[in-house]
Image 1: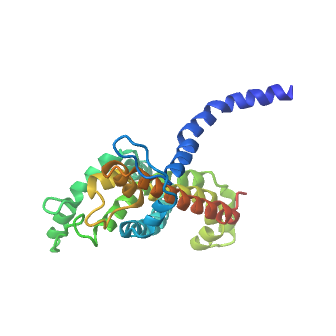
Image 2 (image 1 turned 120 degrees about the vertical axis):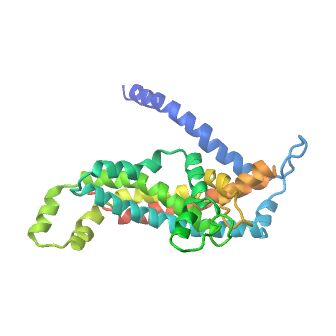
Image 3 (image 1 turned 90 degrees about the vertical axis):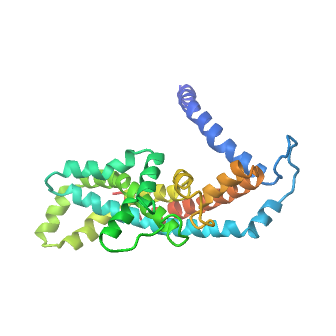
Length: 290
């Protein structure tokens, strides 16, 4: 009987396991395997070159620039998106008139397609007719070439990312806030606890599981941005806004250097594995689930 139940369980899991293997595990193994070969040329299979691709990465100035860009991109967008989404969730969870409309307004950027969002912000950032420059000029300030200036291109992408992701993360915080036991807040009110003490001692600890979930998603999103770059800057000017996954895309589909793209993908997978180890091995121990 137990064996029959186990067989039924494995049969139920089989479709999901097959999809997971086909679209995750096999591609990962294939990518690691291809990183030790040179790119095929004119239909000829690539030759085994060992770790030469990885040695070339160490001398690739563009790779280090792109990795540095991605580091700053994640360092700024992830905390900013989490903080903004938490503030928005606390605000719309309060007794606020018209809060349903405000929730809808906050969540609307999330449901927009990535390409549509990029085109909207392309209009905002356009130097001559862009909305932002028109507002600045109306206030007496000089407009900027937001996507053409190496010092402004990456921060401009960060602002757009925070705008789009904060509303999505707000939904998770809002759900967590609405599921909290109100008796805890009643007890805090009886003890004359202030708003900051209540947030620090009750709200924030209870939100830690949700925060960990959001942090994982935000970090993954920070390393998988391609759509916006393709529409807005294509990594320019002079790789000032280029990020790691878009650099992989360029090598694979623009330069047709699939072996080097596989090498870069292997490095990206290693970075994500380190982040996952830190999140689940260290941060998860700091989370109070009850």
